[in-house]
Length: 253
Ligand SMILES: Nc1nc2c(ncn2[C@@H]2O[C@H](COP(=O)(O)OP(=O)(O)O)[C@@H](O)[C@H]2O)c(=O)[nH]1
Ligand SMILES: [Mg+2]
Image (cartoon, rainbow, N blue to C red; front, side, top):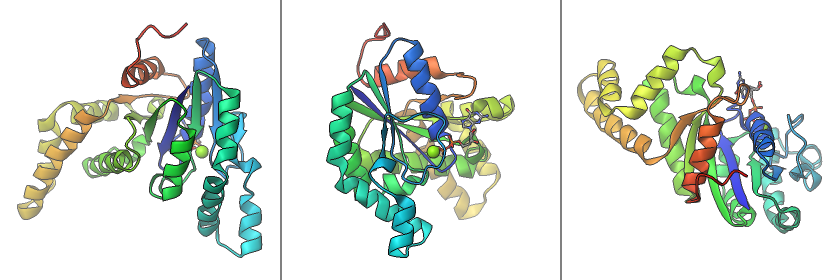
């Protein structure tokens, strides 16, 4: 079983992607399990086969422990980690070609807490990887784009799992912006020139270094563009997953 963890900032499209990608895989004759790891999810665009809301009651934790929404989320994720055996057994019992694992709305809950690592380890049955969804609205300026790549790097360092960067919702972004992002990914100079134009003096020296790093990072992760609404880029993403997991390209039955 391949475990695909879908991570990204709140609203980057994780749940929508989980729904569309799992349907796409099923249409291509793959067996798929969907897993919801978000204890605070209210309505999901898919029917999860495994759902943490069955083992943690976020609302009750908030009410009975007198916690605010964020503290209750942290407590909920702790609860999930404590009961991870239950989810892991369910996953093994169901068995499938793919498990698509939708992670909590707040990225830091899963990515930067030790519980996130425990959960990821226990739900990685055979091979696993991360898809880091990038909200294009958070990657339109050079500064935001750089922050996005740095965030992707810290997530990669946090989990040590192969990571694919996917710019999401591309159906909703004008083509000229997508072209700009593509240029930043593929040319060190394009990004450097734009960064230099908006900085001076010492800041310019630092941004030059940042530009070099951003380019290096962009080269280190497979990076592509997808839409969960129109399915643009999904086939290419699947091929990238297959390659990243070291499998043959003709594995679709
Ligand atoms: N146009 C468009 N909207 C999308 C796409 N994916 C997600 N969205 C919208 O973005 C918002 C957040 O999506 P959601 O999947 O809940 O994000 P999550 O918080 O990361 O799980 C919702 O209003 C979705 O309908 C996409 O591919 N295209
Ligand atoms: Mg979600």
